[in-house]
Image 1 (cartoon, rainbow, N blue to C red):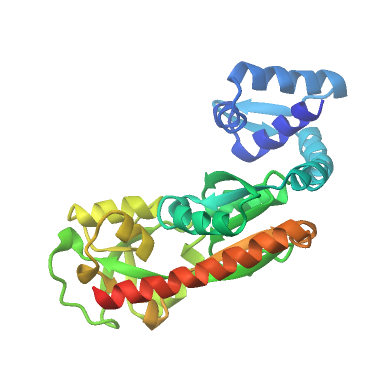
Image 2: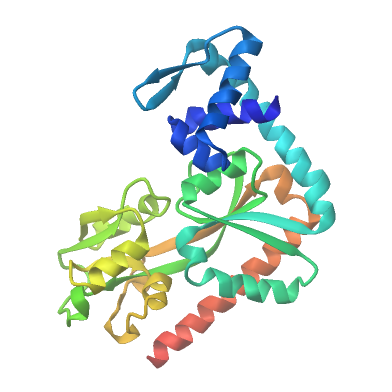
Length: 295
């Protein structure tokens, strides 16, 4: 029954059978069967179909509201009582971090904590936060402002400098503070809210947006416009450091955060993990400054 309820919760978030089956890694027919079992059990229609979209009925909405906190607690209990005892840390990591400097950071952490097993899930930052709240992940390494996350412990690990990749890597005669249009991340990303204000202060405006920083960088390298991305993304794609316009010293940075549920953050294993991650993240910043100065 629990897996059927989890399916209904996921369907309420995704809005389609296709996306629900993708998230849960089951077939669409399995999704339909699980919902049908719930409807027979409760004797109520829980969903309504509108073309490909699915919306919850009044009864479905009430059921989801009541069971979501309970399911989250069940997951959390499993993680705290079982996973922590085995020395495993299940984490959600922002895709742009795990595809750039993240693996190097975690390799350094693993050296300090050789007995801890890491399980990684690459997601966009808003998804990481949702899955922390639902009890699926133990910790998150993600980006963006923590203002809305009052139910979670959120600690800044580092401020990753934002850089401008000149269009096509052609020389760019630009002085910070001048008007400049750039391609950058779209508004639903975790990073956007944390960089929007400083972009305005520096008179950098978003002319085009896409869903990932790696896409932004690739478009800039191909000559579709100047790209505003985190420095780690630019370096991962091989953009020459000498061509990048670094904006970190001017206050345009992407906050990288360590996030966890309050009960999870208090556990000794997570405390040790946070301490080492924080220490190694600061060391990485020092290394980056040295490399940038040598470039």
